[in-house]
Image (cartoon, rainbow over all chains, first blue to last red; front, side):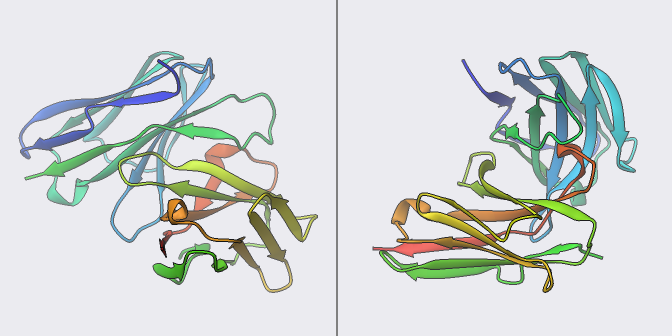
Length: 115
Length: 114
């Protein structure tokens, strides 16, 4: 299997549930990202991990909790979400070799619906 | 305040004709611009990019034009094909930063009809 794989592809959860999104990359990249895509809004960067260390948290509410156990896997743990958190959650990875890296690969996304 | 704007949410074009997707930006510190293409149920994929030191970059049927004075870029697809039907995102990079600092637009849905 190659590229960036996200599971599940679709998730419906209640506001009191706890669930996790998973992302796995088979590209040997050293950086991984979580993005949120809401309807009619730009892609919003949520978290960045470089070499398993979180380097960016774009003021994301604590009900979203990322985890990066190794450079190939990234999780997004969800708990007590709100209906407005319903969106497409995209994972991406890239190889950070210099300050000007821009090429990244996205997964297919997880379509999350909070009811 | 959106720094990267794609004011047309959708565009319909006939097969064989030219598709022109537009993108405007406000930050003069952007030095690199990218276009991503997204099919339903798939993640965005990189399509073409341009550095701010250039005004044109061509790759097959895809050409990106940059007008720095107007802070405007456009993606031209010639000739358009039904397989080009997708959502196209414009993205801009702040100077001296990497992928994690890309600022995305809201996307334009292109529909190419046979």
